[in-house]
Length: 155
Image 1 (cartoon, rainbow, N blue to C red):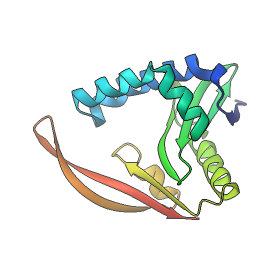
Image 2 (image 1 turned 180 degrees about the horizontal axis):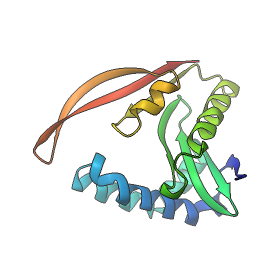
Image 3 (image 1 turned 90 degrees about the vertical axis):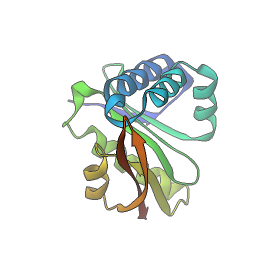
């Protein structure tokens, strides 16, 4: 499988919105409250939000045969907002390659520290990539306490 990782442009918008929406609605119930899922689902369809992100953040996509199969967003301070891969392409090394690109972009942009929010689905991925995991807080989701974590990595 040969995919390419390139910086996102406005021509990627509709494909990104679809992937983001699918990811939020598929995995959201494992990670977010119902109100958070609504918020993120609305963001998926908000063109103004995405166009602003294209201008100010580093957004890169993994594309295969014209489809976006993975994506990441990192701001100018080194905070990784998201990194995700379409569910049909899990386990094929796409997230690993997207992460390598994050580090390359950060180094070229003189970003020395990467940070991100960690959830149960991403914890092992970030640990494997050298992030120190920090326990933040406890929040209640669906009547159960859920620990919140963040990750930090010095480049």
